[in-house]
Amino acid sequence: MQRWDQKWTENDGKPFAPHPLLLKNEALLSGGRALDLACGLGQNSVWLAGLGYQVVGVDISGVALTIALSQANKRVLSDRVVFAQMDLDQWSLPTNMFDLICVFRFLNRRLFPEIKTGLRPGGLLFYSTRHIGILKRQPAANRDFLLEPGELFSEFSDWEIIHYEEGKDNEQLIARI
Image 1 (cartoon, rainbow, N blue to C red):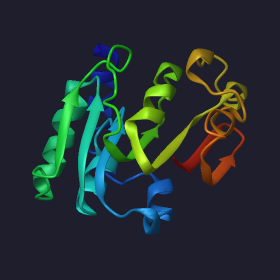
Image 2: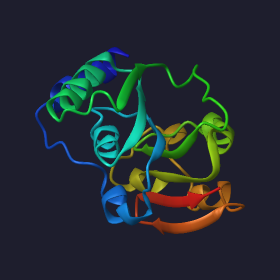
Image 3: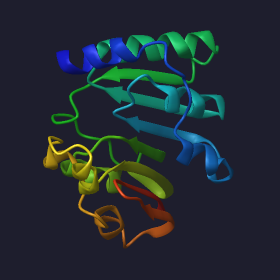
């Protein structure tokens, strides 16, 4: 937790913008309940709240969540978003609760089955994170937290794949259950 608090302290004050995958696909977003896993500074949570979602943003870093709540308050959206400090290695997602789950720059394979059961029928998953291609630029990166190429596609292949893209070091997916 201390590592993440330090990271987010150093990142405070940087641009507060939602992930480009959300921005490019705003037309798919129709409101409801959203979960932002490993939400960090909360830019995706706050943006989704601005679109009318009731959002739960979960992260291990209290520093990040304090910044996130400050941003929600600044935008008068704190009534639409709840931030919860949780260790995602220990936490379990509620079942059949969300219309949208987003996960950016985070990987915990143990959560894949819970993501699948956490979405309501018709719910959307937005997921983007690094794969092992990053090892060419960052050889010290921990392989446990990197996807294998095609892993997201394979994991969610029984869903309706709306968008899938594999870059040189990143993989992204939008899928509907």
